[in-house]
Image (cartoon, rainbow, N blue to C red; front, side, top):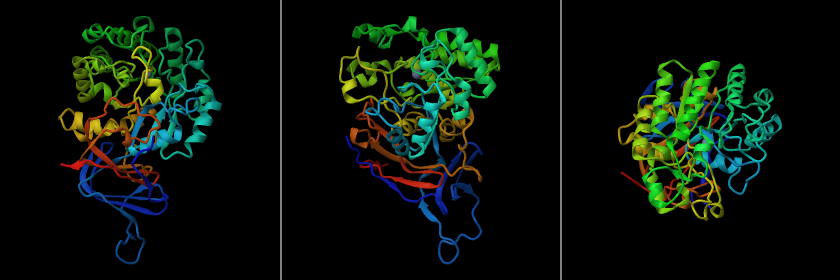
Amino acid sequence: MTSNRGPARLTDGRGLVVIRGGRIVDPASGRDEVGDVWMEDGRMIERPSDAREETGGRRPFVIDARGKVVTPGLIDMHVHLREPGREDKETIQSGARAGSAGGFTAVACMPNTDPVIDNAEVVHFVLERARQADIKVYPIGAITKGERGEQLAEIAEMVDAGIVGISDDGKNVDDPAIMRRALEYAKMFGIPVIPHCEDMNLSAGGVMNEGVVSTVLGLKGIPNAAEEVIVARDITLTELTGSRLHIAHVSTAGSVVLIREAKRRGIAVTAEATPHHFSLTDEAVRTYDTNTKVNPPLRTARDVEAIQEGLADGTIDVIATDHAPHTIDDKAVEYDLAPFGLIGLETALGLVIARLVQTGTLSLMDAIRKMTVAPARILGLPGGTLEPGAPADVTVFDPDRQWRVTPDVFLSRSRNSPFYGWTLRGAVEYTIVDGRVSGWAMPGGEKT
Ligand SMILES: [Zn+2]
């Protein structure tokens, strides 16, 4: 299936670029003002004294951003790019293009590929593929070999090869002694451990949230406790080891309470939530649309409210998509049999603006912080700011433009979104990576 959003590479990254007259929102420096943003040869710079747009001097490439928002390039620290192994669902290149269209200039990709990213060779493969991609791709290595939970992966050699964190995402690390050793190793290398918290005995056979809706639908539920007992365990082990924990895709009110309390006690824990977990409840499963089948599952309105409160009070540091592409054939089966996951890179910003900013839950500054400097700091990435000297990674979007989610807007190789028919707000116009400008035209949509 093709998309009707045309990518246009407008510059090659060399020379001067100026973004004129936009609302600059840079959480790293606290800047929120209308002005110009300059870059040269892939770096952010102050306005150069010899720049002349009219006559003489050097001519910059000019982007007119009046009425638009200019932010550091968005960073998604949790995506599944499916390469190597399932290139029919996504590739590093197609996922990166979807990311660029969604306003992301960098993503961190999870290791549950085939083969699993559990040794330096696979890390090198991913980074080699990433060099051809539209945006920056940072691999996360597995905690255990093959994500089997038995033996630690080759963490030291993967760190040398360039991983930015470790995770067995998609699976829990069941053995607490192995989790403890992973935390100790990660501490030595200064990288975070990113657990997928799910007690596999409590969740066994479950396909959606355990509650009223699962009972009515006759589907097997996954209780909130399946997540919370492991969140509590991993916080305890983080305190024991003095290591650094970043909890993936928080979905329950109880997890938010546990993380808030851990932070209050000074434990080095951070957390992320996905747009679907702050936008949808398990009521969405009533349609039996397999695109609502995701792990952790969509929870209740009370959980969604707690996630939003956690985002607002800083308990949840990061918004990440858990972009998980699946083919139409994989999802076109009964609910019980469908794989977990949905695509998120191209709807994330629109959901953040429509569901968090427009509703007053988060300021634009706080929302952008959770998609730029916060993930950059957790993973130790360059970027996340517009300050001079930083990489020229910038996102320009129209905050007022509404658009309807339809299959043909997506550049991802997959189409498994639960948001068809939704009207979102905030359309990406330019994504700039190391000074290379890509222009994105959102079809249809109307200004309000
Ligand atoms: Zn996960």
